[in-house]
Image 1 (cartoon, rainbow, N blue to C red):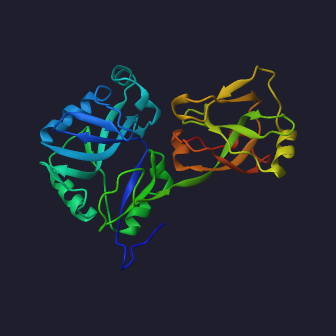
Image 2: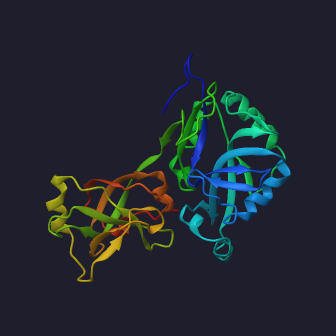
Image 3: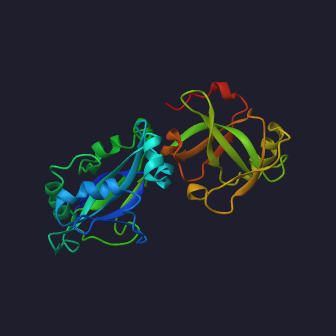
Length: 296
């Protein structure tokens, strides 16, 4: 976790699990980081921004389902989101232009102050991301109880730096990681010497939900894991490690859900919205799936 110094004073913001987007309120355009026009996908956000006048905002598009951020729900259309009870928000964290004045060369502290003025009267689905220069307050946003909501970690920004385009520019991103127990429900490679594990955790109702494919197992864990898993006899299945199920995917063999392993994963794993692959740290043959605490 970075600290402010005499040469670099920092502000901290929670890192939300969503899509980065530029919102041009005057033109009625919402644009992805790659330049794709998202206005038709999220018309409610474009409409909500019209009263702001002529501004260009940088921010995160997030989807909220049952009090948690749901990254996957962003891929659904407006009708499907509505039926599923998903609400979309635009959370602004920077102001790039205001009334034809380009602010990108101004220090972040100046842009943040102007952004707070612009966002004074907004209401959902527009939001202003919280920001603090208090490191202890920022660390509170890294608690596991907060990560359950879908906060991935923190972003630290230098108060005196101009805006930099691209994937983060001068920002320092700090991801929240947790150590949790998970159940093995599949293996790749030879079952007696598996290469990777397909993992699941119990949800609030006790049902096992996949949390993804692990990183390759350390060599010293492969044979012991093979002794502790039993294939179900079902046909091979496929799991994708790409966003929204994109990509070729990886074939795995289902196994009986009996082996528990300890993994290090993104904090978002507690909300079943992690995107990075968990890392298996050790096998837990001393535990059973019934011993796992369900995610809240």
